[in-house]
Amino acid sequence: MTQTYRIAVIEGDGIGPEIVTAARNVLQAVAQRNGLSFEFIDAPAGASVYQKTGQALSQDTLSKCRDADAIIKGPVGLPSVTPGVVEREVVLGLRQDLDLYANVRPIRLYSCLKDQSPLRADKVENGVDILFVRENSEGLYSRQGLKDDAGATDVSIYSQKAVDRILQYAFDAAKSRRKKVTSVDKANVLKTSLFWRERFQEMANAHPDVQTESIYVDAMSQYLIRCPSNYDVVVTDNLFGDILTDEASEIIGSLGLGPGANLNPEAKTGMFEPLHGSAPEIASSDVANPIGMILSMKLMLDFLGQPDAGKRVDQAVQTVLEQGYRTADIVGNTSTSMQVIGTCRMGDLVAAAVLV
Image (cartoon, rainbow, N blue to C red; front, side, top):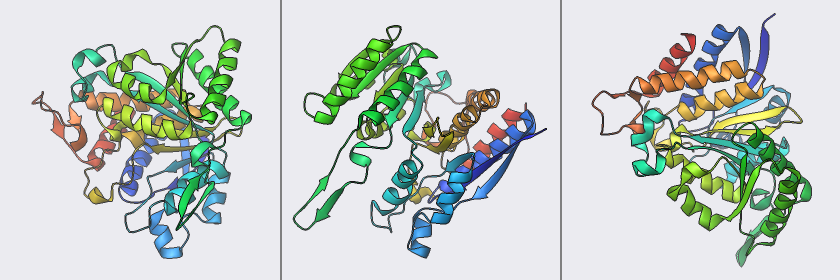
């Protein structure tokens, strides 16, 4: 009997519909190759929806997301909408309303893209393979605070429950990788970070088989450039994780290559999206890189209990890149064999590689 998965789809804004279409085409190839079935459910949300209805995330869409086996989310936001309105309603709203407490962002440098990294060759010669685990429900992104003409306040609160469960996720992930966890904080200044560091040490004591270290976030921003190969699993808070993963994605060649997952493993709920924004300036021009979105489907398949299908997507992306195909953001000047292609063509090639 064919396994069917109900997938809520938020196409988003800007380049969102284009890269989501590419990802859906890849999933259709996966379905054909691996004997699966996907039922895609339209779940509108974002700036364009806000402009039409005055609401960026409706209760109907939220209900569809709750009922689905997984959620595909394209980037949201447009410059014509006041900054923060859509992000707070859709991005933070979905993460918090569905309690998607683990934001998981793998940063891996494909060997065929080493010349695209802005770092010197000796900095990446040992490879870059970092799993960022970011707390996704509390901290400064918890939508607590106020703003008036006299000033503004954002409130950062971390509960023991939130800290312990994200640390546990990181340690569990490390045990299936290289058994090293790096915790990033600002414990010399922030009380929430000091609490975080104390809980991390408790967790480290309970996992003596895992190598651990704590690093201040300002130092970590340097070490990612100086020695990215040193890191395996990096666990950090909501704000620091947001910033560090954008920095790290440039190490591997482009923000357009970065996948992301928002997970609640206990509730078996997951939302999958690329790291980048909606890039409205290049929307509908067929130049956006869909690989971050496509690799997010790899994470979704893993989450749905289909690791073989997820591995097939990853291998398909690598195959297409090794064949010299590039979107505009990852075009180098060291090879004459590269072929610059658009969003649609890249998605089609990866889908075709899945079927091989």
